[in-house]
Image (cartoon, rainbow, N blue to C red):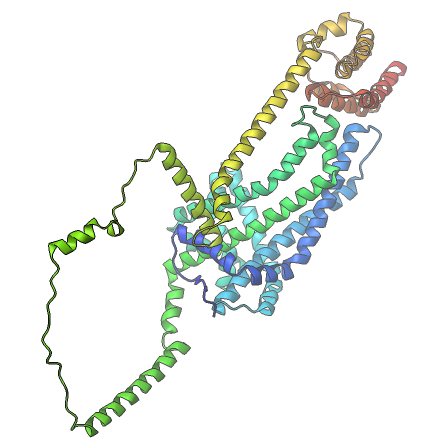
Length: 540
């Protein structure tokens, strides 16, 4: 039996549940990770491949739709990859939850020792039971959330423990489903609070792993540099680095879900002990049956033997006499002078003069103690020392400085870009001038002037207004100021015009309303779609 064995079958407070969750994962890290990846690893690898394919193919398909009017994505393949990814998610989450629960079951039955073959066998045998129960739980919670949110939250609390109930009570799917409500009865609020705290901890940790992906995405979009790229929004989904970061973040978030499962088991046993005292009864029944108690019996017999032997020897040696010490006792007295010599000696002065601390000193002390307590709780160490102690003390300030720097740089770049656009596009027309331009201006001349000024974004705007003008003259649409671009799309009856107009509308929305700068090369790509529709309108 392990020296750091953690007893699951006992009552715990919220703090004990949190600390024992991380203590169990620390103590069992090597055997748990080995068991987990031997069983779940192959399916997790398949899920990673499915995720990479899904992201690449979906990103490529959206890029084709946005920037190539003639390309048509392969919808059946897209659906097949999406279905493959969804199935892999279900399998991986089912296998991971079952593996964790059966690992703890083997750990508890073996008092700290596990049986890998039993765990693996139980996981595969209960696979479809977990799938069925997961289906019931998801359906019930989803339907509950649809009804004003509160019923879904209420159902989430007991049903989150249904899997542990099924494994440890050896119940069927329907029995575990119903018994979970009985288990949580009269303990709903404390269970809800515990689950919320655990969810917050896991969510914050998950965001930490998702942050690199988000930062890289912002960099590719040009947010930090102030040069936002419309095409870059969709191209990022095909970027191998973005896909890799997303895969790493997804796997990390998936592994963090193990914390929630272990904490859920502790919550289950806490509630079970309050209602059924199962662990208490087992401990009472095991009294007198352990090797330790058997050894104590032998020690008592051995002690009794020695006592009898000593008694016999004492009877045989009855003629022995006792010798007593008759020397006089000398009483030593401590005088006041003796005490004063110790008082005057600074080596015996233990009085500590406490200096008044400022609010800054109190804040630094509080922050340092909080951080050290966190790492002690997380890593199970008594106290950090050496480099770690220095690192733990300065890391909050480093993170704060980095966060402030990122925020300042972000807002400065965004504002600078907005000012640059404002100066560059002083000739931009307001939305209220559209009617004047369409009815009174020579829009083709405005397009040429914008191209001479290399203001390609403004040229796209004029080109789009020119297309609206042509369709209005052809009575394909009825131009009105309050209408949206998609109102005009719905007015078009001719199918040969509907798709090209949808394509140039996407160009226009991304470039004009998205406030994106484009160069001559990107303008030429968009111009080909505008010219194609223009020729169709003039010849039609």
